[in-house]
Image: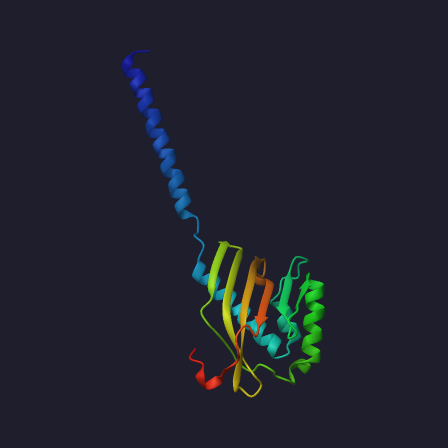
Amino acid sequence: MNLFTFCLLVCTGFINACTTDNKKEEAAATITLFDEKAATDSIWKVIEKETADFFNGDYEGWASNWSHQPYAMQSWNNDDATASAAVGWEKINTQGKDWIEKYYKNGKNIIHPAVKREKALIKFFNDKAAYLTWKQYNADADKKFYRISQEVRLMEKETDGWKIVNVSAFWGTEKKIAADSLKL
């Protein structure tokens, strides 16, 4: 093989390699990027609906916002300084349904008629998992005071959309505040 043929083969190989790399880059560029804003909007709709359904005593609506997996969890603090947790959908479901029936009387007793939230901190781990935390203000039945809670959600995207995998809610972390002083 002469020098010209050798150089021609090397150049052809280089050109093919560059063309292949460019095609890979073009293919990668056509992959749809994860739209965090759209995902955030979808997640907030689920969170807002779950809260409204729970506080309004709508059991079916409330349950539809949850992941029904055995690794789902709901945790909260109690007035006596203890904490409780329901681990797995079956326990969350039992606890939630009991609470809705006992305290909210299936929508006849609205204990928290209004909810306001500070801007949440959001961390996406990928396009199917997200962590959120925020401070929430929960109005009393007369809308005179707000009880403050620190809220945490883990969200997972299932085949039918975003679902709640974890609710951690810590109430009474600060003194309640008068409704007319809340500036949200």
